[in-house]
Length: 280
Ligand SMILES: [Zn+2]
Image (cartoon, rainbow, N blue to C red; front, top):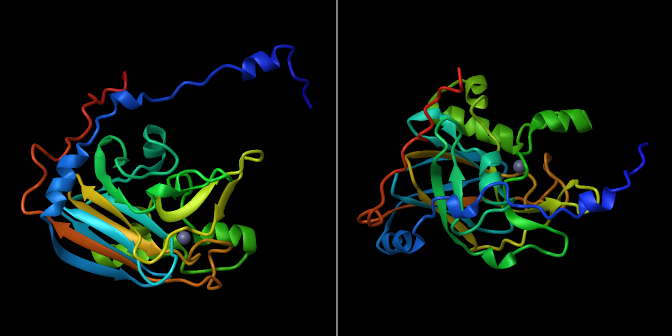
């Protein structure tokens, strides 16, 4: 045990500042995106079965929508540069640049050295939810993904339909990579429709039944050519349990839309411009 210093209250009273300036972050012109979306036609549709994962491909300048179908269901989303799997969604930096839970206007950023927007959220039917009395909100980038290793660690059992495994199987099937090579590309997700937060006193990661209902959707604009994978989490609405067959689970729908022409003035974002010397 360590006693508080005499100036503990003064140290705690320091007003925090944002780590990254929101004003410096390049902002998407949503009005132009929505104008392009208005003339877009559906190009493809993929149904992700419960407790399974599926891949999908979206061209730069196209749109993809994830929809809740038959009942409340959480989805775990991975994104890769379709031409280079080493550039993938960077959940932690996206969290730091935007916030803990994403919604309309927020972007999904890629790993170093790319660090560029891979996708921009253009519509979210759950944007009304905000932050509830428990400090929870939807579409988080604070969790990782349910996985068989943590399940084994905590429960001593093997379960093969965690999101991590669903995404691994989906990527292996899509790319022809073996399971272990595919697994190495699976990364921390955007938890689509999941309702989560950190407990205010203990700081522990917590979840509650998702407010999503059939017909709700989250829609994205693809800034670069994307390979995506979505898992319909075995936790269902993630009200109480996951990593088992206990929860009621439902399919998720992914639709791809191609506009007649991309948003006016839009170009796929270039790779990050850092010179790469690292001071060596
Ligand atoms: Zn999951």
